[in-house]
Length: 436
Image (cartoon, rainbow, N blue to C red):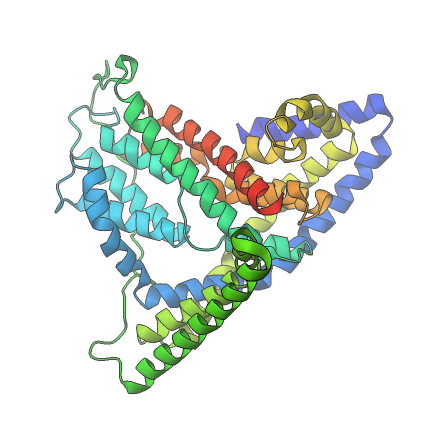
């Protein structure tokens, strides 16, 4: 799908420019967009590497295991068909915990293992079971509590005055998408057309080989025994000081700007520093050698930055040509009256359409919108929030169903797309609430 979308952008750009007399603009845009893509990567690399290093510190400190333990009772209720001691339940718990922390590289192997283990409980080979469909719906809606570090890095590189301002709106949007996807799963499974039926050629499918489940970063505290007086004193002193400072700030801001204004102030200026210190304190509590763990995570972050460079260059050049040709303005002018009637600016439409198809493509389109519209414009804020509202639906369905040999996903796709739509609606509403 993305192949045809990308090819269509480039071909339509050149054809439209030929009739509109904008061929010179398209030619210049190809060079400038490629240059700006590399410049953008250089700008976002530092913050992304730093934040991924922090996540490694927290994971080494046992945060992933702690969240997994907290999630286990809820997931046993959501997946009653899965025995609590079955390997599938353990993989589901670790996948959800990894997603909540924003550890996508760890979440994917756990997710693949979960699908394969769920398939061992499947009585209809090749047909998705109810637990499989629910697991897919939750994964594509991708509820994440941690700050969207990659998005914030792009916003910072684009010159935003408040790169972290989209954190709370993103939480609202992803909560909407997850809630809607789960509700759609329960509603759609009652329909006869989505009933589980054996396939005509129901041979047991060959399952795809699984990558090794990552151990690094999920092992928990490095040492056993009590924390020791120095660590306890540091944790108590820093936590108490930050709580007191936050309380004073809230008291003053609520009195001056009201509750909504105080929430906006905290989300824009306090959340990121508090997140940094909080993750480091998790490492301290887990007896982690913070500096060494930070450097190890930063190396992984550098690998992530290198991997996204080709995607950014390829997509940004295509979108830049499409915009320079005038075709994008023509498309926006056609749909803007409809989308703006529900509070959704047409400038953010490419982001909403591409997000379910390609994570890297949507990331690049978001970067282009921030560059062209401004990172702190409403369209820029909305595009940033959309990036974290859901996961890449078609990619997740493809690799997870492929791992388990599922050919009939039943109501997984409709439930996931309903979650995508709810995420876009939640992002729009949250951005209007926070940014007007």
